[in-house]
Image 1 (cartoon, helix red, strand yellow):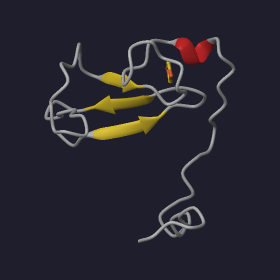
Image 2 (cartoon, protein in one colour; image 1 turned 45 degrees about the vertical axis):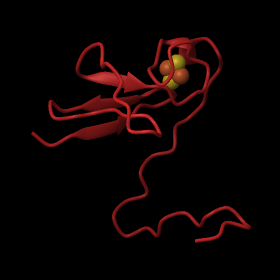
Image 3 (cartoon, rainbow, N blue to C red; image 1 turned 90 degrees about the horizontal axis):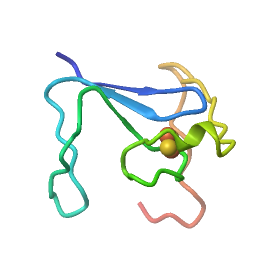
Image 4 (cartoon, protein in one colour; image 1 turned 90 degrees about the vertical axis):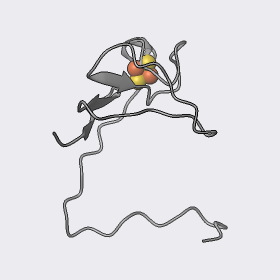
Length: 82
Ligand code: FES
């Protein structure tokens, strides 16, 4: 099964797929409580990197849709060394 990461409107990143491993910057694996699972996108979760629903009460707005396959990727922030 393909792993899909769905950007939810004004909410989390929903990760769907059975063959998914979530690791930190050292490669250590998180215990995923259930599948599918959601990752915090608002920064307010008390259970990062997982979503705990805090986005519903913190006023998080994130409703950018995908621009489509022909759109260029966003430019890196000014001063970024590639
Ligand atoms: S996106 Fe749900 S708590 Fe941050």
